[in-house]
Amino acid sequence: MLRLAYTDSTIFGGPQGYSIGEVLSGYDGIESEHLFVNDDVRDEYIGKPWETTEWIDTERTDASANWLREFNENYNAMLTLAWSEHQQDSFYEGFDYTATDRLFYFDLRNNLLVNEEHTLTFGADMRDEAMRSDSVAGAESANYVEDSFDYRTGGLYLQDTWQVSPKLEVSAAVRLDTVRADFMAEEKPGTEIEETLLVPRIDMRYLHNDQWTSRLAFGRGYRAPLSFFETDHGILDAGDGFSIAVDKLERSLSSTYALSYEGERLSSTLSLAHTKVEHLAALSETEAGVPLLAQMQEDAAVSAGDISLGYKLNEALKFGLTLERYAYDRVFKESYAIAPVEERALLSLDYGNGPWMVYASASWVGQRDLQDYGYEGYNQPNGEQKSLTAEGYWTVDMKASFDVSENLSVYVGGNNLTDYTQVNRAESPLFWDATGAYDVAYIYGPLRGREFYLGFDWNL
Image 1 (tube, rainbow, N blue to C red):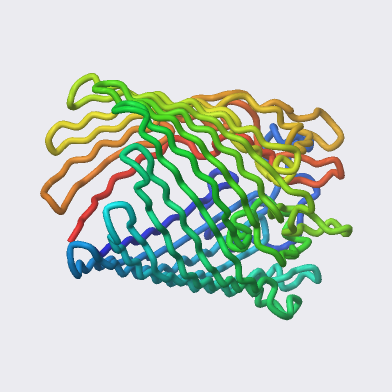
Image 2 (image 1 turned 30 degrees about the vertical axis):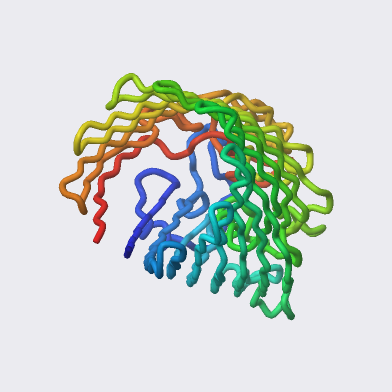
């Protein structure tokens, strides 16, 4: 199977009535004495267009291929190759940032049926990623540390799926991984992360009867906190530069339990999960106030629970309901720059009839206490404090697709059809902090309004 994808996206936000060309050509690096009438972020903007403009232009190309070879009825192998190139050109209120990220992935997976009780899965994979960034404004700051990096992982894995009895199945897996992450800036000599580690996992499934099934899983995981940093540039005071203090892998230990019911019309799943993370990455700042990508000294933990229900009205129509709850501990909350979802409900409708497929969903996000995540901001310098409560809200999405042939389908859809945004229904993400500095990070709700899309899927 061969898959090709190309994405060209432009996101442009700032004062109305200006193109990005006009904003960039008008950049002079001299900040206005006043940005808003009465210095109130809710009043008319009177600063220069570039001082509150954020523009992100991205171009991404993906290619992947899978090849399956069956040697006999007991043994097969699959080769997977993937490649992507992601280019970003952006401007954040006077701070320019460009980046090119190239990634190559390889996986050779083997499946061997040893006997009626045991199936072995074994193989090797490799990921090689290189990101190079540049910033003219950043290079002019004495505090700027370029965030270019090389990241390579290679692993061997083995899994035994053991059919203990007709009711009980146990899958035990282990990976041996080598990880190398190297920030390429001159200020970051040496290799920051170079580790070899074992990553075990065990999954168990028990069939209580024809309708009820339990699943239990334990496992370790890891991640190098690297590439997510670019997405946060827009909420940093990048004029002071930024720095990086990452020298460890994030390591997680997780456990999950799920109880499922499958009836003729009704299906449901109750899930519980708990994850503990060491060396969790978070945005911080140096003593001089320079934004810093660092790692938490204490372990962080989050617990989650959800229940999903599905009811099949007939062969073509199905309704769904999902309820989710996340409980973050203090350390996890301190790591977030933007308040995450704590409670969510999802109502859905699936309709399929011949070549037609229609999906619609309504999503509710619950109220949150912004004080838990360190929010503090003012509409005027040393004036009225902004809300410390994020109110709940609803959004609606819809997608319809039509199969033109076995290989070709076309689709059309829309996201956030209610056009709910934080700016329209609550308050501006613009604010003054306690030191009198202006920023745009008072974010707790959707900022992108109603959008429509259309496209096609073509499988060779």
